Image (cartoon, rainbow, N blue to C red; front, top):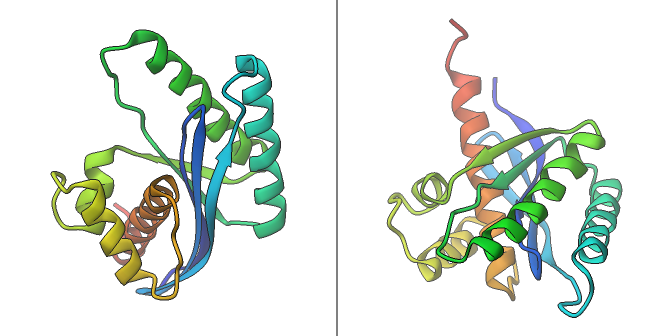
Length: 167
């Protein structure tokens, strides 16, 4: 049975968190909304996390997605930056879960493979394919394109799961 779902994709970051909302109807995808949640870089970390949580809660209430998908974080050389990114990711996982929405997690290579066909794709290739898969989407920020890619990845995984019988 073809899937029909509204999906929010989230690309977490403490300074900028991208979000993208799509609707999947079988193998057809439709852009609903996208954007970036920005926090004040001069504010305390707790305040920035509160801003992120409140903004995500508003998005979830406004768009009422059926599913959420969050990009997994990568570990970089700067441990402090990685830790702060982890804080933002925690909020990105918690907000939909608190709203009763199932949350899936995908690594960057999995997202790239689902959208472009290769896990080694560059960011601009991902953005180009997102625009092709979601005609009419006026994506202005890379974070939003990444979030839409996460949502598309989840839509593909849902579609595959709906075609594969349970063991």
